[in-house]
Image 1 (cartoon, rainbow, N blue to C red):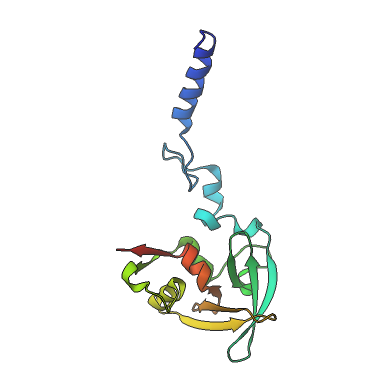
Image 2: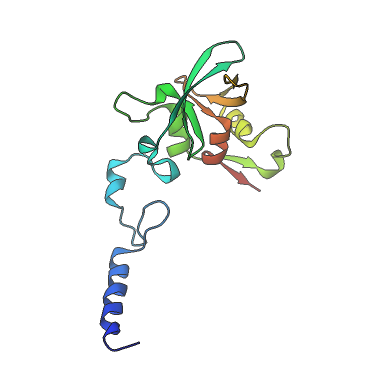
Length: 165
């Protein structure tokens, strides 16, 4: 290394030590929270869902009821349209579970087929399972929470559960 490069490297290294390296949950390795942590209640992979593009969808339950949903394609999250407030903020029990709740722990031995992991998570939470289909015949399972909001069991599997031994 040249004698001119050494001071630049030293400054960069001291900056990294002072600031810390960001981790996947936006915490620096020094333990200091980033400025966005104070303004966003949600953390993790769905923290910025409000700003993500979505598609409005209507599904029909097994008893013929219309179920409006919003689908975030990139995140693969289908959640009740009622979760999106007029301000654009997302607030409902279904999203609180996957954003801020404790992950549902499912023993690996229970994942032997027949019932999806997301369905098992919904059952373990003691919530109601709802089946639905869309206008082109696709079927999906949803987990209904006390406020009436629903999330697809696939999203619950991706973001709201953890397989344990």
